[in-house]
Length: 158
Image (cartoon, rainbow, N blue to C red; front, side):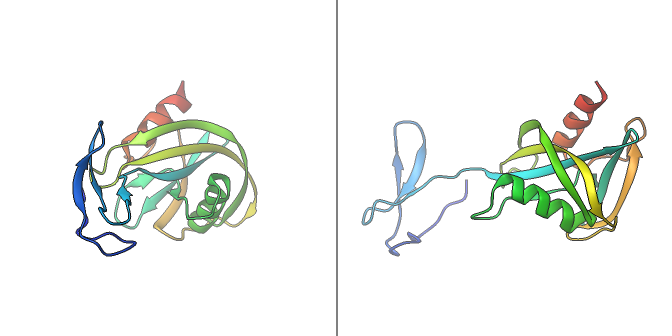
């Protein structure tokens, strides 16, 4: 568990405290409590002619194009922004396909929301965290780097 030494609001040294459920850090001066909560991620599923658009990450491996929701941004806005940044394509969201907790990175728990989408414009090109983008048959995909993307693909196949 990540810990802090000082309160980010008043710089008082933090103390450990048990809130009845979990051991947390709390500021004895201003009362701020460090709740270690997951961040929200979004991904966009674009299927065309039974082929799924995937991105090859700069750090290696393939994934459904995805990213994190920024402060003061809706999850829908984040999905549209991230998808266009990474693929060059604009889409209209067609609803939430699935939501999963992502535990593949022990240092950062995320909750992911996968949207289905339909292309509305743009030119396919890799950008952002991706070095390549390509469509693949659902039956012949490259190795996916995220276990939750593997669950999503299994659901798309069924």
